[in-house]
Image (cartoon, rainbow over all chains, first blue to last red; front, side):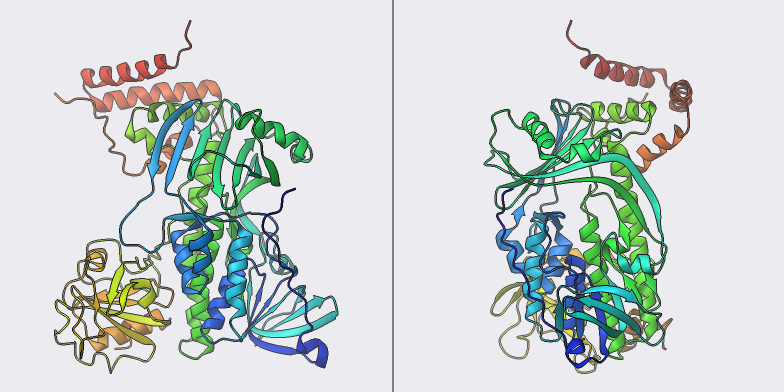
Length: 555
Length: 71
């Protein structure tokens, strides 16, 4: 098999617990160095929390696995200091084409709106994503990555969780105040705690193959229902870096996985799809049945489940990895705030309150997409095929065709951390929404709104003019964990207003429906906590208290 | 008199599709065909205008005939 990416082998080095023979202690132990575990560990460490990240392997992902990285995930990785690699190496795609039989039914363009740093999606192999994250992790002195270290026992949690870690040089114990289990779909932590998934399993199998070839296909997502080269089933084609193409082929329920996974049987299927004389090399073959299911709770005392250990979805819509990274984004700042004494432990309960509805949304969409691809009866197949046939001519039917509803950041509606609006706002930036990016012009050049948000909270104030008076108490009376950020239509003059950012293209004003004096309170994970058109320090203190898990208003 | 609306006015297309699939849940093939027929009659009555129904029938038929293999 071809190998383009060179896997670095990360050396095992004996931790102090093995050398000294004592039990180690750490505020947070993250289990599993996949994208979700790495994001969690980096986020925590960047917030000043000492983290041990253990992984039973000694290198990044072997297969390409998750390849579609969503805009929100790119923004999160960028915040974690790992964005550059994705911008340089990733394949940007915006267009999707959909075929039924031999006909192209329609094509779609993902929202291509001006004024965003990141595109809707880039495709990149999981091993690159993990490699970029490992590099970002290695820059953090308080993040201790321990390779070849498998958690083999999880003690009962009271004041801490005692983990037993097996290594090539022996076993040691590690006590963690909190544990984040990012150990994947077959999570050891989940099994040892005896927790069951609830949800659905789909009978149909999908053959996932990566091939290397010099092909003329554009950087687009192509999806076929019942193509001539793969009768009665569906197929998906995606471009990755290094001339690698992802091909998903649906197989029927009777397919024998042991036979279908053999390269000699995969090759003829690919040849029918491409051309008999197409030259290609198969890099990776995998065979899945899909499951759409989750744990009843993502929190068990001091142990948190994030990513595939907590929930699994079929891949149509790119909601697995991208959903998992949003788990990390949601949990890390909360753990850090509690460990630093900035928030009560009650804040941690909001992880389940916010991420379980988000997971259910992902499960609903990916279940429906998989259902659309795999009709369960002749009657349902008739409805599906009628939808596809009408989609050639009718927009209403095109909108019912479902080859995957692509991942968008969850809006945390109904979260106990949100302060409900008491005034009228247009647009989508309601409390719970992930902050939309927009250009912000600083005196030294153009930057992005998301780059200017604080490590902790941010209060974004809009002024009609950079020289306008600031609200009472602004900025000196703002709490230390709230970064003041001011935007105005034009850049401030040199001098007293030099810190005012210019919203010269107006995107910030439009996206946030800003009026002079409007203030948004934005959380450390860049979700909107509260907004007002009548700012006061009392409003801010109440909204901040609520966003930090203090129930109700202080006033 | 109103005309058949063919522009997209579906608010939640995935929910509509799911409702249609759910209606067939657990039915045998013959029962499913009967469900479709009865569903059409109920919706035709709701429309309440013969010309609108005829236009829908004409368009559906044209779409089906388009896929008839060449003789």
